[in-house]
Length: 289
Image 1 (tube, rainbow, N blue to C red):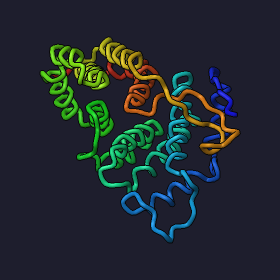
Image 2 (image 1 turned 90 degrees about the vertical axis):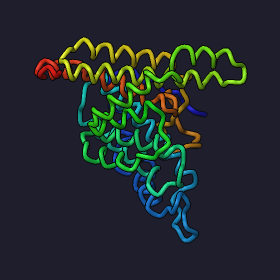
Image 3 (image 1 turned 60 degrees about the vertical axis):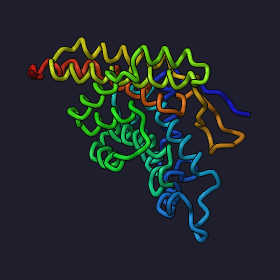
């Protein structure tokens, strides 16, 4: 029977990371995941591959999301510390393993790359984050994921163009959304997806304009947009902190839904957690034309 863990205090979060973010955790899951990723060929293991654990793909995803969720919670409370950087680095390794030698055109690969790069970025490995996103030009990314990728690789010009085009597109305007919602044959989630992506793009547009103008109040506008995204995201799924997936002793906690909206949770914490740093940096920026 699974025990639901409710984590609230800094001490509880740090104790959990002491358990799940140590070398060799989960039966050396990260080491087995790295080997599994290298052995794979177009997403499949050769027949002579060593046994690396049934369901290792699921285990890596659950482990990565669990670490990411705990690290984000702790970072909101303490800022960037050795605890959070270590957890982000291990989460990034889990997501990276899921993308290495993956199935061609796997719809999840781009998403995992963005998550891995974001985690590496928060772990202070910006060069690795940059290199991880280089192969995603043709990945199956939605607008929010592509915008965040451009921000991580510091392509602000590309970000500015991409977000403007998405927000100003007639296909994403109110009239188009109204028609979609009135059409019984259209999945309402499609309209919700457009709203979420547009809000993410709008938040990043606020932040980009703040960097150009030095207006710190625009950072608050960006953070407010992220809060709107968090209010719209679907009900969270479960991730597992204790044991491998399927373990009777596993404990579970809400870790953010395993979907592109998880990235919104990440960036909300990123902007909110670093707001004072951003404000100080913006004051020192020259006003750009």
